[in-house]
Length: 467
Image (tube, helix red, strand yellow):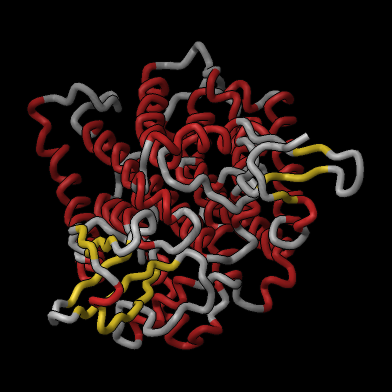
């Protein structure tokens, strides 16, 4: 085990210990939202649905199975906008008067992609619903900064440095790990348990493993497995695949660039893509088949059948629509704390806080070093090319992450943003203004990790402060 691996282990131990200390009493029992445990348990009982009414009404997919007087059987959901309007699983619209229904049954499904439930399956087989998702999340969360440290060290080996300063490079990498682990919304997301944060943490670990495989491309089969598993955790993160394609194209040249490839090197390019593509396609096919078995739609994970307060908007405008953009942009970039003249003195919207408030060091993304060499400039473009479509999916989504401390959907591309900082702001990482902003982020996110879900006096159910 070399020095970098030893430091990565130390990063994991320290971060996991601090996450566990922050979680505190939560570690004693499962959270209130153990959807993936329920999903794994239903598989063990040979069912695709829960087989019962869920324990609470938050983010479950509900499908109604109807038998009509003429013997017709239908499955789907009634639309809230028009009484009697029923949308079948196949997408057909029918008007069904109540008098025509002779039997109706509701079945409930987990509406989240299933990979976290696959990982929890062994624990659920032993512990059942006693499986502690808080401990699971804390143990996963510590892997994220540890993997990021290894990725950053790998980049140091691959890209020329602005100056020979191994100690300075190590310090800069550790500061970036601090930013990720405790200076971003990863901190509050790591100490709660709950289905939404489990999905985020599983996806971040998979993304970290994927990046280790493709920067540079060394293990294409494992990269394909990670990319397929990512799609079955947070589907929009499939755009990490941009880096896989770019890494394969770079094998067609001797200078590390990815374009244009040499015509006599297509075998070097296609071979790793095929090795990565096989496990990716198999996992994607399994996910699509699972969707079709439940909802008669290859691409439907169940969110179209949510019973939450957003159901009306989903039925009217769909899961993704530009009409959601202004609200989501506000949640991502403009929401600030509300200051009060009396206790508790500060309150935070359930819609979260601006990324520039929780992680202000990200402001450096807009001012890369003017002295970047061609390889760094190219990698920076590729990282943005992967991050931007993922971000766009979140900004067009029907939900802004509500209820949250900070804009949690930024976790989908946070690893990429940290890498962009590492690639394009080397000199800034060593200076005190950047590190002061990291410390600010740590203080803010420590407040969130301690108070969110515990001290609701610091939170209010509104979008903008009302004077």
